[in-house]
Amino acid sequence: MQLFSPGRVPQAGDALLPLSKFGCSWGAAGASPPRRRPPLSEPPHTYGGRRTAALRPNADSACAPPPPPSAGHHVGARRSSASAWSPGGRPSRRRIAESSLCRCPTPLLPCIAWMAAPPPDPQFVLRGTSAAVHALHFSCGGQEPDVPILFSGSENGLINVWNLKTRRVDKALDGHGRKSVCWVETMDGKDRLLSQGRDQRICLWDLAEGRTSVMDSVFTESVGFCRCSLLKVAQGRWLMAMAAKALDEVQVLELPSKTSVCTLKPEAGAKLGMPMCLKLWQISCDSQPLLLSGYEDGSVVLWNLSMGKVLSQLFCHQEPVMSLDFDSEKAKGISGSSEKVLSIWSLNEQQNLQVHTTHRLVNAGISDITIRPDKKILATAGWDHRIRVFGWKKLKPLAVLDYHTATVHCVSFSDHKNPSERLLAAGSKDHRISIWSIYTQT
Image 1 (cartoon, one colour):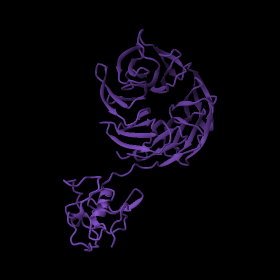
Image 2: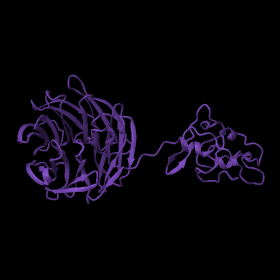
Image 3: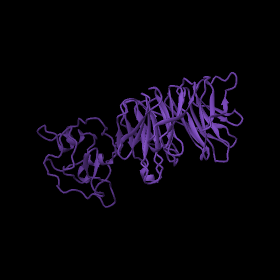
Image 4: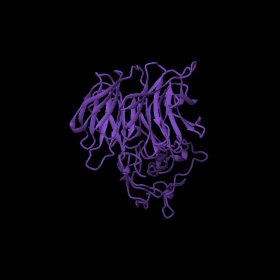
């Protein structure tokens, strides 16, 4: 029986031999190995599209992990020892095993079984935007009869309302003069929607009972790329922060009255540059709302809205801060820029920002960062076409989701009440929205 051939990956139907037969000695030349399979500690599973046996060792099994490289055995190098060849110039079974992928004198299937499982594929993909996707927002937290909805804003100025059950567009909203939509957010359910476009307008949409009309709008006069931030402070009352007409200023409005709450101006001589990202937050409903703003000079600034002054400033990036998110329960936030570093910072009791730790990335460029509502994981959108998932507690890398073929502009977690239904959506320059179901267990 021919066990292996050079360059061939073993298949599930190949005969498996106990590892005890694959030591330094294979027995007499020409001896036929036993044909029986070793006991399996787990049922077969799928790996890389092929059905293989899971050979995880236990105390009762003859299987054991491959031995570490020893003297005279160099991983990745071919051995030229004459003893590795049988008489007549034909390679022995041991020589064939060494010329295989793992370069060690042990069978390959155990090595394959111990390799890490590949990342999952998207649960499904939404196509049909006909333009790059720059903004995403879920509305899935309603009662059971309600249909889960995903709003997407595209570069062509359209806002698509996706039905996640049919995976089709229910409505297409056009209110920004075909200018790119960079931010979408709902106000108390899916019937009232805010959208921000590069036409320097923020539109309030009435979507109740099938309507698709703009109820009201605000002219921002800002020419930057900074997305707005929305915070509900009381029943029927919201605060919205947005970049102002002056390049370094931020304006805060009360909605729906559109009353100006404050305009945040840096001190004279503070060269912060333009605001790049904003995050309104408050510890509780009774506490004062605060604003975190990431600036062009790489700093993150904490603003007091009632006084209109800076509480703390932290320089945490060498490049402009492209996105940030904040966990008010842990008083800890994270920011990304066009460089290869994620910065994690915290807020102490004196309301001073301080760097907690940093995480270095393989490739530069972060478009968006979002922490899941349960504060367990976070996701980043990368310029390298990838979505990265981290554990929020220690920023442990959990997954790299590689599906898109162009820059990923935005990521968003769903607000499903049932944890097992939670989804992650990513919008890309390749005109596609990938929907993922990962780490849904509590």
